[in-house]
Image 1 (cartoon, rainbow, N blue to C red):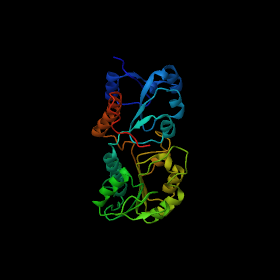
Image 2: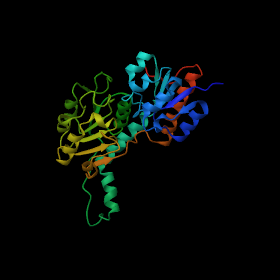
Image 3: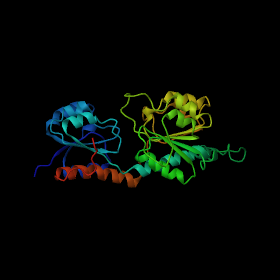
Image 4: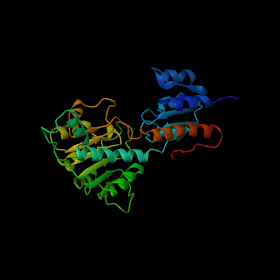
Length: 314
């Protein structure tokens, strides 16, 4: 029986690759130095593709895949996937919408770490400074005014967790999403009314619009303000963020994402007021397994004739 040809456009965990190889003829395009050249060689045979949020699938790649029916994304980010090209060709895009809890959990972890100087305190103890010195006091998250930029699936989970900390929650979003929390028309206005600001918005493709968080937003948040980013690095003016932190115009930050990953500005790495994690918001054993199952499940279900399990409505 013929096994459908699948293009692996974005690297996957070994167990996901093994499951795909068991069900399909898999072409590891992501390993090629020139992805487009690799696709040209097999393009007419490819009926499905597997990728991830940071790799996606481009219009140029889609043009080389005349038989493509479905793209399964390991993640929920679609900024690097050309949805217009997929829509025009009738290609189904499926995501792995199982990571919202993990991302919200890390947002709260970063908030607590930034407020209570947890990473700085760890370094302080390891360096043998405890005793001769005292760590500077932290900030109390409980009762803060918390602003959320983007009250989608992740933002609403962040809000649910913040309620346990008795915070006063408000949000900014192009769409009115909640009758419970006040909505600000402007991100600057939200920042001015916040002690801590969470960026949870969908990013859009790199370079397609101005940063959501720029100097004006950071200045409105102010020298005691705390900024948390679990969205995308390129929707923040990173140079403005670095300047605000180094000049003391922003109090602290907790960052899981950066503009040019894995490159992180040296100035950010040098600041005790910044907590850094390497884009691991969804990286728990449980969720990584569930995301991989989504990728495999979507492709297996599609080629069994029962449709995608978690398709994107386009």
